Amino acid sequence: MASRAARIFLRISWLRASGTKASRLKTPLLALGVFAAALLQSGCSSLFFFPDQTTYITPDRLNLEYENVYLDTTDGETLHGWWLPAEGQSNGTVYFLHGNAQNISSHLLNVAWLPAEGYNVFTIDYRGYGKSTGAPDIEGALHDSETGLRWLVSQPDALSTPVFLLGQSLGGALGLNLASEWVQRNEKPELSGVILDGTFSGYRRIAREKLGSFWLTWPFQIPLSWTIPDEYEGIDQIANISPVPLMLIHSVRDGIIPFHHGQALYEAAGEPKEFLQTDTPHAATFIIPAYKHSVLEFLRRE
Image (cartoon, rainbow, N blue to C red; front, side):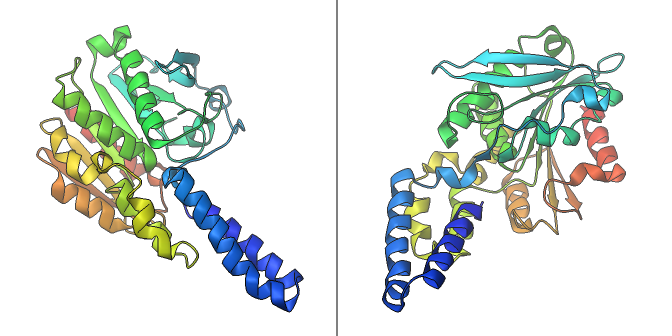
């Protein structure tokens, strides 16, 4: 999340090294002012989104059947997604919301194992990611996540088998908000379970941490975090997911979203809930077979 600031820092360093003594003294102050103005104008939203349009892998390269799905949003964007049918009889459907970088093709391996276990998978790219149109922001991504779920629950399999939501990192934060609203509005069909993996406890909270960790953005951590509406803070909404079963996953070695975020979400959540403590890099949970097994146990109980 802090890579944008890091790139600006490198640019400032280069200018300082190549300029005169006077310009080397003025450049940091000038750059700081430009940087602050840019961030204040755009708010913190850009800190959460790092999309690209590169196709890294497609499901057929993993011997998976799939369909391209295109969805129109109510505000005029078109979203691209993949439907991966279960192999053999379907035990349920997993709606997967991916993290903040790249697009669905770079996150595919996180769910590519589920069809062999009898689960359909549906995943979308938020606006501005992959083949989806538009430019990303928090409100737009929240809207997109609901658009995808509404399409999914209109499909025949979703009406006859359980529907689960799985979100990683940013996708977990979006999924948390979506699940909370879905439950509170008594939407049908009901979610059978929610899994949040490596998720931060609030947009404001993680923005402050990331801005505060870099000297150039440290002075702006409080004012910029307040540009994010407080109704999006997951720690204030997670209890609303109850009584839908909830599984929280977080790694003690997560270098992107610190472990204390997962702990805070678990403490704030209502029952039934469980916590899977892992020991992998950020969003690398499913490289470990034992962690896959734990998630399958959760899915099969519901």
